[in-house]
Length: 260
Ligand code: BEZ
Image 1 (cartoon, rainbow, N blue to C red):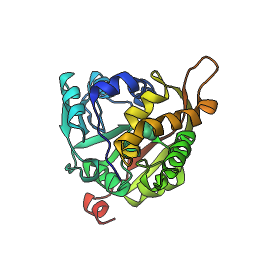
Image 2: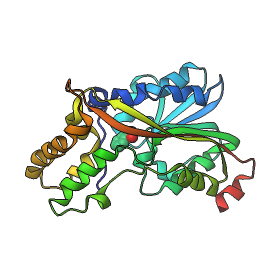
Image 3: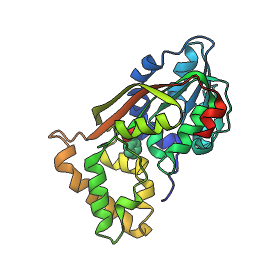
């Protein structure tokens, strides 16, 4: 699987809606002054800043150096970290994550194990990411276009979109009790159209093609999607489905959680 490269500038132009539409999740997190909160996959820190404004002590982590730089430029505490190998042992009352976990397909169990290690017993894990059926039309078009070029597009997909049942099992394996979970269809207007979306989010898939093949492949994906995702006025609307959840780490000893 090719890895995604994040650039804060391109993200702000093509994908500011990701943090804008993640705002309702802050109400679910309900951060309190003095609470220690980890923002997992903080990106450029747009939501981390709102958590900090509540008076909580927030640390953002991201695996993209350019995003960590952008978050620090907002005056936030932010560190480079691999979500699949989180270095924290206790110290956090809550872990928050918006639109990041679907990028952690390689080992979601390692992510949840790291979150459990980072939380104090009874701590909460609140988040939202792509759920089962997310961007289904886009996935189908990408797989078809890659398949026409001899590539197993399904195997190359870099995204993890679990069902609520599968996510519950993953959380429970690591000592969490799921308090709330929902699949939320959220048709999402794309400010820079499908071309901007593909440029920002589908890099790992186009990287499976030779450079000279990419523009034609991209145009083919766009034309396949036009009838279902572009309205009469030329507005592109992506078929997002969010998996939104809140969970609590059972008040067991950390050693017990680590053994799971
Ligand atoms: C999402 O936020 O659901 C998403 C982002 C990038 C690729 C696919 C899905």
